[in-house]
Picture: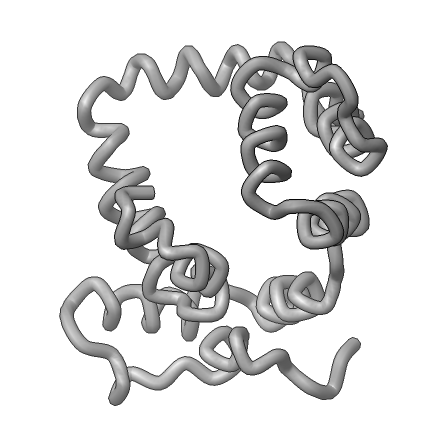
Length: 156
């Protein structure tokens, strides 16, 4: 168990209603205060100290080469498959092999989730977009990557 908490997770440890503006933020803060057990909060905080070796290697490759060209290659692999890149770097190959075939993926459970979401119709967007996504945006440390890349202002 860590004694320190990353700055971006301090709101998980000691949420304060006095800094919450608007009903959604206040409800989210109340949820953090009362619905998350101490063990779950600690699990979230501990997770913030973990890295992602595969993605770290991809980022290192991108900055060691031409980031603009590397991003184009990444997007080509993402949209069309890693096999469409003639000379894909090992970092990109390793990442996409891991992403395309994760050990934990249960195809039957995935199909069950797809079927469930399709039954929800338009209401699913209210829950996923308005509550989950916007609630996530209120957690500054978790959306820092989107802010730094400018993806939020470009319609991510």
